[in-house]
Length: 144
Image 1 (spheres, helix red, strand yellow):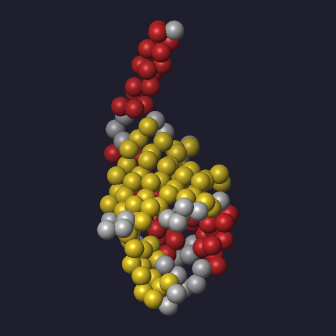
Image 2 (cartoon, rainbow, N blue to C red; image 1 turned 90 degrees about the vertical axis):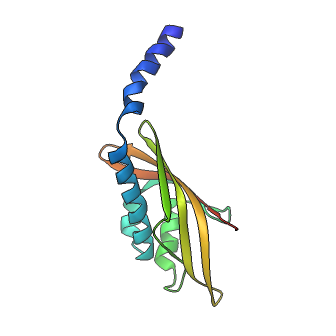
Image 3 (tube, rainbow, N blue to C red; image 1 turned 90 degrees about the horizontal axis):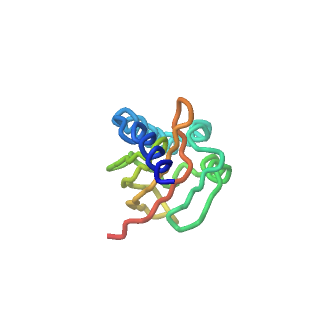
């Protein structure tokens, strides 16, 4: 049993020890593309980035499916909140899974008043084949 675990650990090392700078650049580019597509209300582009079974946790704690999220993008008013490119992004890898964390700012109008909010995000990306897809995303307001 110990031998099997040691062998499994040894086999996993090349995957975990690989240079992930190229992967990090790609995930960061996907994060920025997500924000640009959101601002442009481009549901088609977002649809390719998001896995069909994605779990989306909004900053108010509500859950959305991919379809609900994309429908909300398509029906949003022009004055709705816009996301700016992330202020910061950090990417950590676990095999073919990347966890992106960072801060983004939202600005726009809500109930006729201008708003600016900062949120911390955690997005989970998987590499399947030649592309990255987001399988989980959450945002939490930064209150200070």
